Image (tube, rainbow, N blue to C red; front, side, top):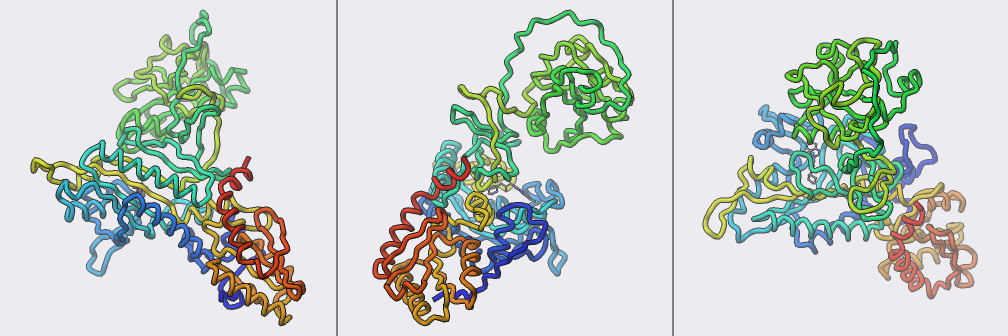
Length: 584
Ligand code: 9G3
């Protein structure tokens, strides 16, 4: 019998001020987790039970989909990462260490290299393929800014799976099986989620989706169609270009104007009264080893991922003030696409810059802009492309409808890798004809610890957590009003035993606290059902309270097990609906 007096649930009334979001506060307040160092947490008994329930669902669905569980080391030799080129490609985010012999290692942030080494050594024939291997393991990433509790931390639990196929068609099948397994996993957990198209980066292709738990504090923006089924990450969402149908006017010659300390779009708008759609914003980037000037309209935002993909680049960053000055002769804020040597900088522009008819742009001279600027007439663009972020109200790029935004937390990611790792690491197999071929890989991640936080974000109220039955640390909280009263204590113990025997997970609050204190803690911890044992126990009655609705039922002790089981089943079915209804 789990007696709360002996069980470690250190609930808190106050939380550290750096806990900004509900899930972070509640993880600490309900005694689920404790921070050891920035972004590094211990899971206490209740928190660990939640993690284990999430893991159990993930294992069931991964096994059902035919994947095999393994467990790989966290410590990974540098040489292996050098083979993939990622030892050099990653900076301080990769946690590096040396052993006593000065040999270099990383603490695994992910396991593409290790799994590739394993499979290249032990799987050599098409007869053993396809294969899908997964693990649930602690990962290490030295995040710049760990925050939001379990959402962005430096040590976290991930389920990572890797599929190996003989062909792209095979990969597509493996990928679909994982996509379906993920849909089942997040549905069973009860998350309100959406699979959204994500940026595949240099690998390209259409095959990467992120599973986003919808919630306002999410760090990612999702662009979705208000009518159709389209949903994509902001970085990924394509913008369709339809040329403006406004007739071209006669525009006077370009003219330099004095704009002292006017550097931003807002300042330009205010001082010149220019429509922001007529302003040409010029941003200088270092794209790998090239300088690129990217132009977008004043009312649009440049999408760095699109710019990076346009150049198939590894690395992009804004140019430094020095780089800006040495190229244009002007300080940042007065940069424009005029009089620049095409050998030194390539000018690219978002499609919508073509709709600027009578524009304003920086003059490459401190405190000056040009007005009456006409693209094509006054400056040359090497390439027009889709380079801006989609906006709310834009047309959906697929089918009808308009674009709206939502926020989300990434809880899963499915990714077609192709031969990105099998090529450099030599993960090959012999085909039916005895020829050596590279395996075609996919990788699939689920943030186990992050799910716990995402669920709390979706399932809480002002009093605490409201666990969905699927991953609740226990199903039922048994609370005697006064544990010193024999009748109440004995009844509480009796029903705890009876429910436990019926397969219900019970936490029994035997602490010598006032009822009010126990009820407050019970609401905070948020088990789906609370059973209150009062003097009515003499008449064979207890009260059952449903955490998510607050409704109460007086139930005969004799019928309690059946009542509880029936209610838990009902709550289980309605979990997803509940999370949705709270958000709409
Ligand atoms: C690193 C560091 C951080 C990283 C990576 C490598 C993210 C890295 C992407 C992935 C992709 C997939 C397996 C499961 C599904 C997702 N951050 N990624 O590769 F060295 Cl320091 O992890 N991995």
